[in-house]
Amino acid sequence: MSVTTAGPVVSTAPMTREEKKVIFASSLGTVFEWYDFYLYGSLSAIIAAQFFSGVNPTAAFIFALMAFAAGFAVRPFGALVFGRLGDLVGRKYTFLITILLMGMSTFVVGILPSYASWGMAAPVILIILRLFQGLALGGEYGGAATYVAEHAPHGRRGFYTSWIQTTATLGLFLSLLVILGTRTWFGEAEFASWAWRIPFLVSIILLGVSVWIRLTLNESPAFKKMKEEGKTSKAPLTEAFGKWENAKVGLVALLGGTAGQAVVWYTGQFYALFFLTQTLKVDGATANILIAISLLIGTPFFVVFGWLSDKIGRKPIILGGCLIAALTYFPLFAAITHYANPALETAQATSPVRVVADPSECSFQFNPVGTSKFVSSCDIAKSFLARNSVNYSNEAAPAGTVASIHVGDKVLSSFNGVGLDAAAFKTQSDAFNAEMTTAIRTAGYPAKADPAQINTPMVVLLLTILVLFVTMVYGPIAAWLVELFPTRIRYTAMSLPYHIGNGWFGGFLPTTAFAMVAATGDIYYGLWYPIVVALGTVVIGLLFAPETKDRDIENWH
View 1 (cartoon, one colour):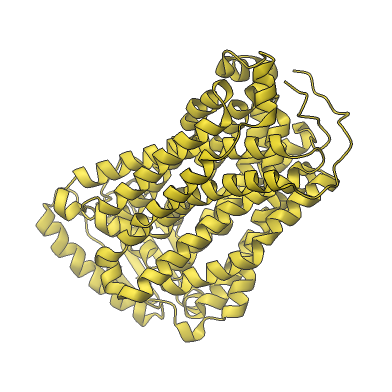
View 2: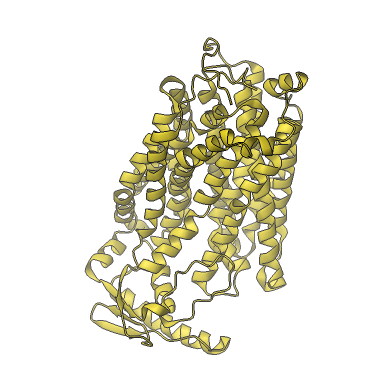
């Protein structure tokens, strides 16, 4: 694979009308794609109650996150399917297919009956819809990045493609606004009961607008020229991944770029929201407002860092963002706890909790296939404490010992649910939960964050810092990925590492982090996941990733 590095003169001309239209059309479609994914992520707790009500609350929340992650799990396969189509047929028509598939799947979620109405059929269909959405998104991003980059003048690809990068955050921002407006209009009770469906249903309007605009696009000039010259790839999958020369570039793109970018992105936007609502017990509306404000402040920096990458390079900005994020996550999230729920911070410091249990009874509460109900005395105890954001230490007990929980000077016994029928398990579980709730409330652990105690300016500042890390790693990534591969296999070759990074490393972050917290008893322990991945990307990127800002992609077939 030859690389042209001595490119044409850098353009300083303003965007043409056609270039603006290309960016707008690509970005509008991507806003819609991400609107759906963020919509589901923001409503995970309600989705759990609606479609996974047949299991205990902790397992239900994990399963809901897993259904969310299912869409990410298949994204690499969508990258292969639609990437190949985009390199064979063209960018424009692949765009139309992906957005139609995504849009209809989103709409159907809004009319899907709940578990109470359809039983197991409901969550099964929900997961199938998530799979379709994930497949579509797997083909969407690579197409948008490739299409815009192939229209961008030399020396300005970072700036042009960074506008697409803003759309992921704008998609979240739009979903939060729709959710907040619906919640405010109908009230919390009605929203939890049925009005949560409205944001899914109104997406059909976005779909119509996106399809109409994309129908007006022309094929990208680089692909059109290559096709006219008869230089398109006949087997893009084989050429991209069957030849080590190209495959090794894809491996570097994944481990030395997109994996770290993904975990920083999902920590700064998704996990921050989960942390506020599930761990710190900030009410959903307040948490959404806090996240929305931080996104509004931070979003312009996608374009800033994209523009800067045209000047100083993609690599120092992406790897710098990964490094700074990894070094500051622990103090930043501890500070968010301090300013968002100081009563919880005080309780953790003054009323330590211990779980004394047989280690063989304690499982890692991560179950992608949904078969475990976590019925051992240890798992029952830890599930309760994790749900209530109670930090605890672990102490081994002799084999066969029923787990006990030490809250200050009080000792409470869990119960063994193995072999109990549903009615008996519920009776004992209700009694245990009531006793434990009284104990932790007495010890000072709050049921929810007190709105009067939330230091809003400081929380917004901290969340904005997390968003700035996101803009550093995400702003230049599209241009870097496009520049790594030649035109004939670009759609396929760049899409796979991007979606493995974002679909697997990033998409599974909330579920993995939640399970890590439940297993260890430390509400911050889940942060080790993005920290380790981000640091790994820094090392691999420094050693093996090339700088690409000066490559001439127009004549690189």
